[in-house]
Length: 318
Image (cartoon, rainbow, N blue to C red):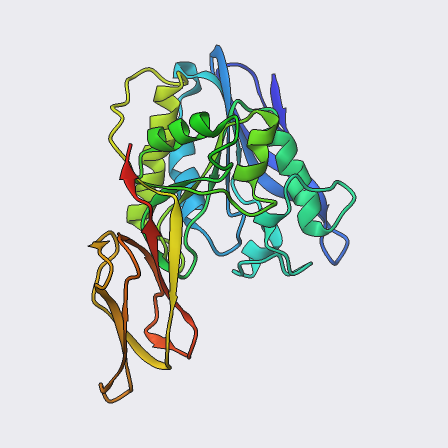
């Protein structure tokens, strides 16, 4: 029997339930939605979580599609899932936990006696510690961005190669291989010997079907490659960047991009222009060096110095 919160599943069974993590402002207990898919045969344990940031919903779309397709009688090992991590932020469709104004994915490994976010992080980190592999599903929030998998442990980490393999198996086509900020699950869990990646499933406001499908395909790639399900995965070469150049607006106005997401750019290529409201050119911004247009703002209006786009740099194929 495998238990996660109120969900319990014997071999060959699936169950859903709640993982209690605290109380709301009226004193009512609340819990995160969880699922246990317990395979009929022994094997590894995979942990999947989504909505660490409350407005990043594509990961929830992946969970919604994946779980009904899992047949435990055909599965080896166990899959543990938390469908919504940042409970309070999800309820109000915000990025940060409004109870403590905190970005959840900066609080790992958490603190059982800490703030709201730290307590949720501690509870989900305990689940991560039970796994052999972990997927922390994200997206670019309101920015437009490529579908990518992020390796956040850093190139000198002892589990770097294992995390990089997991990213390649997930198979979005693009990988950011760059050490992440303190408190990210994908940076912290490898310290405990658990290969973990942070798939960033596109960027949109709300729900993007194409990016969700990338995530569904990625999860099933992982399940087949690591022996949870029968079948082979043909590993395709991935485009990897190990750095970012960020570009802001030199003046206020309206942005027009001259390159699309995924385009290769060379030093001196025009990335975007800024015009006034009547179309008069105010500024032209060019790439500092060779790379790939990786991420861009969604809305055209900008103030002076406001973020506009990012170019992935130090790019290779692996």
